[in-house]
Length: 245
Ligand code: 4GX
Image (tube, rainbow, N blue to C red; front, side):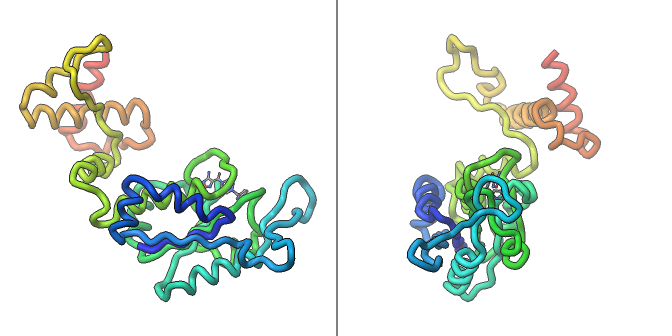
C-alpha cells in the first residue's frame, strides 16, 4: 500500500512509522510512505502557507494553493487512483471496520492541517472523506495520520507475525480483549486464574470469551448488542456477572 502524507512536518509521520510493525512493513515493501510539504509549493520569499481568518478571530487558516499544489504533486507521483482523507475532529470517527476497508485501498493521500484548520473550499473540492481519530483536540493532523497509517499497515498481508495476527483476531469480533498473565503463578499482587494453568484448552477458550464479553459489557456497553449474542455467549456473560457478584 502506498500512503502519501501532505503535512508541514512530513518527517514526523515517517519517524512514527520507522519502528515496530510499521517499520518492518516498510522494510518488507508492504508500505510506501511519502511526505509532501505544502511549504515547498508555496509562493514568494516567505513561502507563506497560512493567513488570518475572514470574519476575524484568533489563529490562522491554511491557504488553499500550497495545499492544493502539494496534493496534486502527491497524486501525480503514482498513476493509481487515490482517496484523499482529511484528518480532523469534524470527521467521522475512525473504527476498526473502516480501518479494514481503507486497508484494502491501493493508495491513500492523507491531508494534515495545522493552525485553526484549512480553507473550507479546499476541503469541499479536494477531500473525499474527513476522519477523526477521537473526540479530543490535537495540535495538528500529523498524530492522527500516524494513527491511521499504523492501523491500516498492520492489516497488510504479511505485516504481522503469527503471534501478532492471533492477537489481532481477538478484536476482530468487536469485543474487548481478555486479560493476560505470565510468570510467576504466585505473586504478592495476586495469583494467576486457575483455569489458565489447567491445560484444558476448551475451558481456557470459554474463560477468555467470558472475560471479553464481561469486560465489554462493563467498560464499553456501546460495543455490545446483547440481543444479538449467541445463546452460548449470553450464558457466559451471565456467568461472568454471577462471578463478579
Ligand atoms: N482526529 N486535529 C486537525 C487542524 C484543524 C483545526 C480546526 C480543522 C479545524 C484530530 C482528531 C485533531 C487537530 C487534526 C486540529 N482542522 N484529527 N487539526 N481528533 O484533533 O483527527
